[in-house]
Length: 470
Image (cartoon, rainbow, N blue to C red; front, side):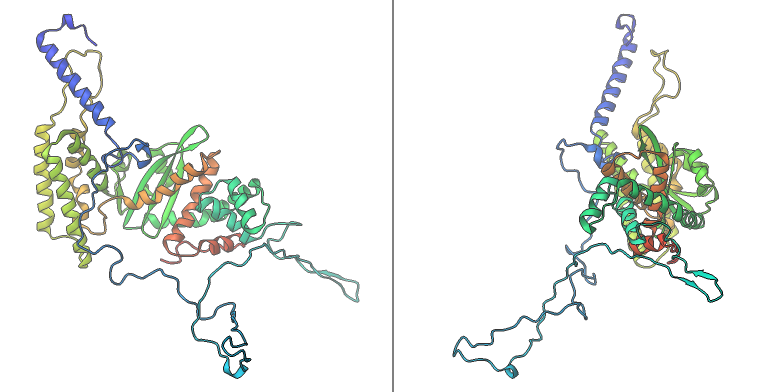
């Protein structure tokens, strides 16, 4: 803080303006939450706030399921496993006489109860024969492949342990408890960890196939998030489409990690992401997530009440509605006239915003401050919308490109849940094993393929290809 006695009136006025600007920035930061910034909902805390205005618009459809929606109610099975006949009294309660058998019949009405049988593990004892020929030669049968220990767990139990930890996010100890409560198994947490290590090793070639398939995909979503390994921050990266999911871990977040994964360096399609700078180093085409822009525009509008921010919000939402209608009609992009309209209108709003948010100059009274001058969030947002106009509006001209990057954000949400439920990973290899197994299982889930069956086959030595449904 400079000595006020040594400042001129002009310098004091400049100082007051600077202090007011800083105060506004602090107030804006305090008002930030998940609805007006990129902060996750978990960071909102427990403090009660006014309910944020939803970004959804009225669709005109009636509430609930729409016509043609497939219901999920319980349905009868044609061949039940068991049939119980509930017998009627053989004595009439009116006259007291016995009812003759030929006058008794079973009604057509039937009520079915779907339930689980009592589940208990089965033990199969493998024994081999030995034979001696008359010539004296001894012959001995072989144990089945994979049956190598005196006592060991089978593929179904190993699959269950991996499924519960890597897909349903249970910690090791709780997985042991679940196996004991559900199946009567006494499997230690160390044995569960061995199953995870073995699964990661078996599934690694299949996950490499997923990465290779993503390199040739037309549109791929990218995102990253921090993950704790002990007390060290690592980064989990994801690349995904509607049918494929790939995860990788690295100790860094930037270009070093992206290069090591090998997907972006060879990628020639359209990369959808949140505008983080390292993605721009790759020569593929890019598309920015407009959900991020909507949240930032809401933040600018709530903190400054500048009209351009509200108008840009409405413009993006209008474009999304028009694109949704266009996709429903089977089109691959809006006409050049409509595409030019949105870009032209966007440029006009950016010019309006530039006038209200000029570049901040260096404070002449602060000779100790060096480097780049910090700009307002509105100024930075305007700069991004202006520099990357083609990437912001790519979804209008090319309907293969979505409005947002929700695909990657949905895929990365489950690993974050894993960290919340189970705590940090103890080792980097544990995080990488999770990435490998989760890549495989998430890909199969997108393709609506059975996960437990695939894991059991994998432990039996036959890993189903994750590309089989393509």
